[in-house]
Amino acid sequence: MASFFRNFLESFCYLLYSLVFFLQYLNEHENNKRVLAIYYFVISIVIYYACRVALDYSDNNNWIYYIYYFSFAILMSYYFNQVLVGESVKKVNRYLLIIVLGVLLFTDITSYPFFNSIGDGIFFLFIAVNSLIYFKQLLVKVDQKNILLNFDFWLISGYLVYFLGSFFIILTYNYFTGRVTEAQKVMLADLWSIQNILLLISSIVSLFGFLWIRFQKKLH
Amino acid sequence: MDTLSEKVTLIVISCAFLITIAIGIVILVLIHQKKQIQFVYDKNLIKAAFDKELLSTQLEIQEQTLKNISQEIHDNIGQVLSLAKLNINTMSGASPVLLEGKISDSKHLISKAIQDLRDLSRSLNTDYVIDMGLLRSVEYELELIKRAGTIETALKTEGKPYRLEQQQELILFRIVQEILHNIIKHAKATLIDVYVQFEPERFSLTVSDNGIGFDASKLDAADYSGFGLGIRNMHNRAKMIGTDFTLTSTLGKGVTVSLNLPITNTGKLN
Image 1 (cartoon, rainbow over the protein chains, first blue to last red):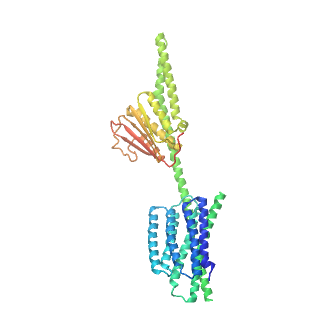
Image 2 (tube, one colour; image 1 turned 90 degrees about the vertical axis):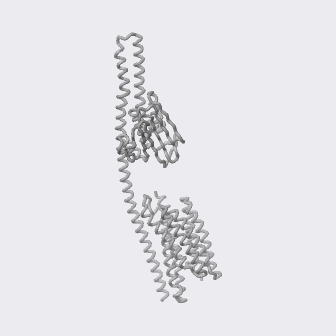
Image 3 (tube, rainbow over the protein chains, first blue to last red; image 1 turned 180 degrees about the horizontal axis):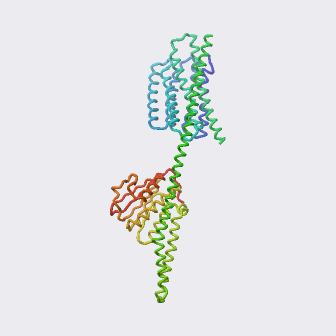
């Protein structure tokens, strides 16, 4: 049975992200935001399609998520390469990407058609680690600009909430798979609703950040 | 009930996770703001120290300028007016032909003294230097030296001229002025070459002469601590405005001084 939180909230959140990036691009004309806006818009349609495949045709939609995680890992590596400062940190980002793509490819192929919790977990962890590296950079390379007027800070705060939370959700799901009864599997599916709620919070944080910065700039 | 309690547990864990992350981010923002306050304080301290050093340098330049005025008046203008006075003193009792010659000489000497005073006033006037710009001010200084008749001067430029910041132009001009004075006083040179390069990312000015030079190889060129006060001052002033100061010399082969300034923003020379 279709549930908005479990099935369609994810697609809605990506659409919201797309809108936020588009508005940010109109405001600041940053190229990486334009790329993210287009990508999120496309992904919102793809994820919606993935939901419909699972609901209408009871078909396996894992292959759609594999493509999404693979492309998103590359996009996030590109984005963090822009916001992180320092050649050594950027190198770490690139090497991590190669490892993540390698693990995703290997585990996706070997686990298909089943859910690939190891590969997906490492994907989420990759972005959470990049977010933590960015926060460390904020504390080390201090300048006069107010951190709350930095859109990337709001965006990556949201990313940390979603991707770190998703990593734990994936671990939990992986642990309980094969150990639960049929009745408990329904409850386990609620984990996906929680993951989507985290994504909603993450997108709202980015939207709030954008509006807050606009409001502050108009005030001054 | 079990399902309900499991759901409640799930919600509680999720909320706890969110609150933990939120607290973490708030702590991060507070630490960042604290570091920012320290950063701004340190930056203001450095700026205050720089302003103090800049003021000290400006006072030094003013002192040097007054010293130059005194020397110029004593060596040139004073001598010329003394000669004019001597001529006038010996006019009484002179024959008409001799008298005419003395009057003509005196007029010529007094005119030279007036012109020298005008030139001195112009080259010492900061506003004049700022209005004309570094290149034209240097050109004018070389013209004055050439007019004296003992030293030939040449100015060569490369690239499209642009203006530097006012402070940079003023300090560079005073350094060049001091170099030229040193050449006139000590070098026994017959030729001064000035080469100015206007590159997009670098401004370069080189002054060289064909004078007696000196053995600079044994002196410490890193911070010019082994050199005289005048050269050390020039080096320090150049360093203050981010300019690289290099002096090379060999005995019998003159002195070359190079000033290299990396450019971040450039204007256009009107």
